[in-house]
Image (cartoon, one colour):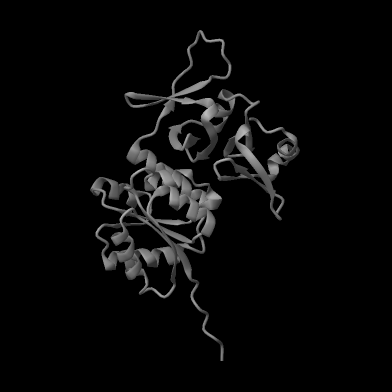
Length: 275
């Protein structure tokens, strides 16, 4: 007689600024035998900390929260940090169509039991075969559709400055001037780049090569085919058993240093910290 295999329990984090919403979702999820609630978060900052600490399999993420929104949270996460995301939203039909076009899971507020059950079925089907990098690309594309994406304004043709002190990022009629020294890291997601600076993530259409050519190589180095890091923000270096390394930044983010760029390990170990 063979024992029946127990279903894998999905370690799940609930993120919503409304305590009643979190409690109501928890009660519904308790009916499912394979869901284990590992934490509650009331804002985006708490969510980032909890995701990095608990490494959940699944996060129910409210989009509309004060401070960091659900979109801001996912834009901060690296592929290796990214759990399965189910958005909890009160958005209108336009946004829902964007979710559906990207095959991204969502539940509408107030949460419907039948819809939640269908979402969990989909999550169970995907959890063993998911590709985090591809999923993050889909999520960033969704952000670009819903919030818009910027582009770097062309430099003044008469300028002799090779590496600018500011990046002027235009988005529609608005141009945001991002101080280059405030950029912590830049990563690629499909056709887009995410520029992480001063707690904000700017999404724009550009290539890694364009960004690499624009930034001062004395301050910014490629550490992965899809990641550029500000060297002054690197706090520590951690070796992994598979030959890769992880860079920890001052803000607590961990970025993968791939085997291709292992020649830079000594540089990170010996380079004096900037003050």
